[in-house]
Length: 313
Image 1 (cartoon, rainbow, N blue to C red):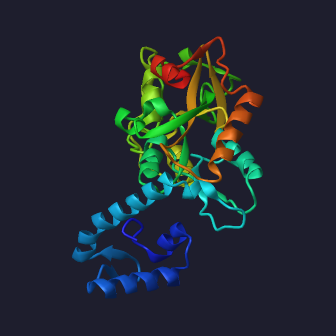
Image 2: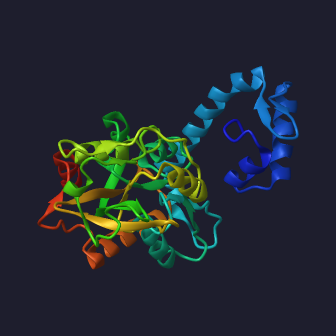
């Protein structure tokens, strides 16, 4: 509730009925003898007593997660038992994470549910993983802060060829493939200013360095595909993407070449994490990487040295 500020959204996130959540909050307020939330028709906000309780509640929840992990309760998953869903951030629809999740759903027992989430960037998703709000994500592991990486594990999944999204009518839109040198003088959008996609913006800066390509300044932070498309249509900057990036109206997607820049993608999770559906997710990633040759680097591929070392490790 403290994070969602809305009973309906909080109930959906917890997989309970809104009425049950409201009842439990009222019961807790009676037991504590304090009002924890100020309720209006549009929003729910913490009271001073609620804010004072919040850090204690978070420590209790973290202790519970550590206890369950230590004794393997989340990994047992007896058939027919109620198991909470595995929450998997796939970044955006259509990317390789979504394909891994789709196959993993075919590998788990019927009573184990795998649910997709869409966090848009690994920097933001990593914080959600460490807070226990999602269980796994996909993205550039080497781009995370070392202190964050130390609390996470990863499994390399793909060296994903990068591409550029061009407005229709752009001078390069008629090419089948766009050489990086042809982007010299362009200002390319790569998520600058979005705190959830810092690892992607950093990768773009390394790719563009010395090539005469500029990273576009921050744009209004868009949430959801429709809002992103609307903002990008107004800016009309080329967009750094990957070859499986979803179609956007009024644009064309062109792979980048000479060299082929690669986006290193890993499956990422919290160290020590256990869940009856998690091994299926890892197995799915391994199978697809083998079948699709996702971890084979092209001879003319480009990847930062740090990323290559982390992926090999």
